Image: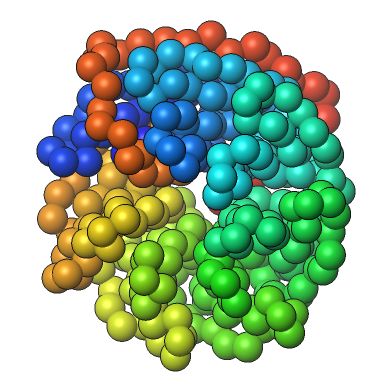
Length: 321
């Protein structure tokens, strides 16, 4: 497991088999989100302070490449085939598109206001992007890098989970999760959760949707909601740490891992019993989390990388999500 510690200016690698921290890599300033590549050989993070996309080699934990993004990059995802990398830029309402190897810019796409979380459809033909300020999701055709639809979804959408037909959207402004029919381009259902939600994740078999119900720093949430995506009902509420933000599910669908922003930990959740079975201390304000299929590398307990500062005078940000 890889974790982005936003206020700790670091990334943490965890051995998923033992729950032990393998290494902490510093030098990535304000990493809000990260994503492991589909083959597990690379991990990609955004540096909000440096306006940078950062790639690390998961076999060595060394820097594999960097590139400038737009101002205040928020989230990064890869295409299912690992060939393209996409970054939302909250500071200028754009999407940066890169080739992964070699790391080169391809396009910049104008989006609705406040782009934040994003995920590709399973076939990679489209990207679904949550726009926190606009209250919409944008649909991007990945063949043309054009916006093909903008769908109103509700107040402060932070992230999405996507299957072949539907997008599920966390609505931090109303403490609900919405279900969107991508073919009909409309919201067709919603369910309230215990606190303003942030990240969502679907099990591999599509039968459960997890919602990390973060809340706010003044009123933090402390639960993970397990939702039936067909009926849009909450089946279970699982205690976590304070401010659950990021969530990822292992491919076996047996365990989930949740970052807890306000206590600097990761909760390990057994999805067969709906219980938190372990808590792993990481860095300050852990946000994004991603699973790697590769075993943890032999590495020093701590190391540092040097990331160029591409920051500009542009305004904008993503604090709170």
